[in-house]
Amino acid sequence: GNSVTQMEGPVTLSEEAFLTINCTYTATGYPSLFWYVQYPGEGLQLLLKATKADDKGSNKGFEATYRKETTSFHLEKGSVQVSDSAVYFCALRGRTDKLIFGTGTRLQVFP
Amino acid sequence: GAVVSQHPSRVICKSGTSVKIECRSLDFQATTMFWYRQFPKKSLMLMATSNEGSKATYEQGVEKDKFLINHASLTLSTLTVTSAHPEDSSFYICSASLARTPYEQYFGPGTRLTVT
Image (spheres, each protein chain N blue to C red):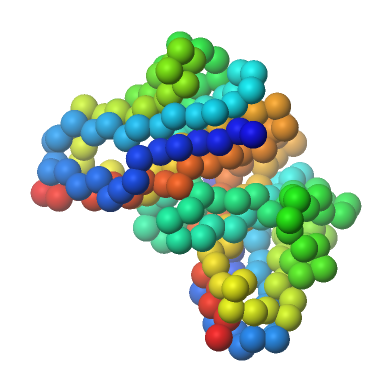
C-alpha cells in the first residue's frame, strides 16, 4: 500500500542554517505530495504541495520538488528562522483521495 | 479563514467512561470531516470520514461502536470514545474540507485524551 517515510527528528539548527528534511514515498500511480507544518498548539497547516512529477512546491521560503525517479519530496529552506520551529509532516494523496502521512519531523531552530 | 477548532484540547477520564470530542469549522461550512489518531512518534492514522447528515465511513480496523462519530451539521462533528480504556489514550485530530476544494483539508489543533 501507499506509505510515506520521513527522517526522524529532532532536527536542530542555528538560525540562518540550511534545512533539508528528507521524505520518500511508496505509491501506485501518480500521487499528489504535500508538506504540512504544525506550530505548537495549532493544527496542521498546508505548507506546500506538488501534484505531478518535476513540480516544485514553494511557500514561505520552503521548497520541495516531486522526484518520481527517486520517489522523493525533500523539504528545503535556505535560511531558517527561529519562527520555523515546528513539526513538519510529509504526506501523499493517492487514488483513494485519503491523505497518508509520515511520522513528522520536529525542527528546532536556535538563535 | 478556514479555521477548525477542537474541544477540549485535553481530557482525562477514568477507564469505562465515555468522552466526547467536538470538531467545529468556525468560518466555513464543511461538507466532509475527517478524524485522525496519532500515536507518539507515529504518523497520523485516518480513523473515519464523515459527511454531514450521513453515516461515517470507518477505516479498516477501527471499531465503529467504540468510536462514535456524529456529523449533525455543516460546522460540527463529534467523536465519542465509548467505554474508554487506557489503550485509547492518544492524540485525536480532526480536519474538514469544503465542497469546492474537496482535496484540501483544514486541521484542528488536536485533543489529547488520557484514560486512567
